[in-house]
Every structure is written in C-alpha cells, then in structure tokens.
Image (cartoon, rainbow, N blue to C red):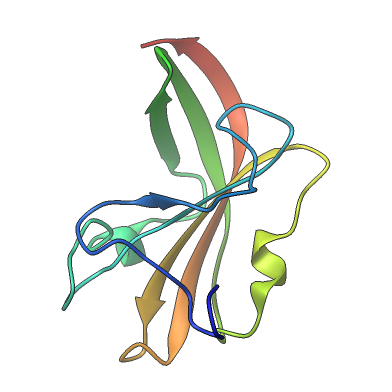
Length: 113
C-alpha cells in the first residue's frame, strides 16, 4: 500500500514485498487485476472452496487448497498479515474497484516443477 492505495501491476500477478515466499511458513500475498487495467486474475471469482491453486517458483510447484473466499474493504489489510502456517492469499478488485476479492489457500503439497 502506498499513500493509502494498494499497488498492483497491470498485467501480472504482483508479489507483496515482505510477505512469505511460496512454500514458506507465513502468508504469501499475490495481487492482480481482474479487468480494466489488466486481467491476470479475471477468473479468480470462479474459484471455489476446495479448489487447488498452484504457484511455480524457484524450480518448485507449490500446491494450495482454497479455504476462504471473501470480499473486504481496501482498508482491511489484515488479510496480508503473517500467518503461523504456509498460506497463499490472492487479492483482486471487485464491486467496481470499491472492494477486494480475497482467496485464502493452505499449502498441501510441494514438488519439483
């Protein structure tokens, strides 16, 4: 967040500096647009609890299982707070960019990419 505004790359999922690296204990936070300024997360709203999300990084594939889907206000930055277990948090805009759609998933597997 910079000057009260969440910073997001236009055409890529952006890693939130200071969040955990994929597969590590803590909260790995990735954000991306779902429409007007880019669409890397255009289908994120179709994800359902129980679905798998895979992140490839550093020659490894990290597999997460979706546990929570919810919308929050841009000021609700607690969704990015550190966690005691490996968690993936995906963030995109929703409700005409007045809210953020959040997907929270738990690490279930790690394997070579």
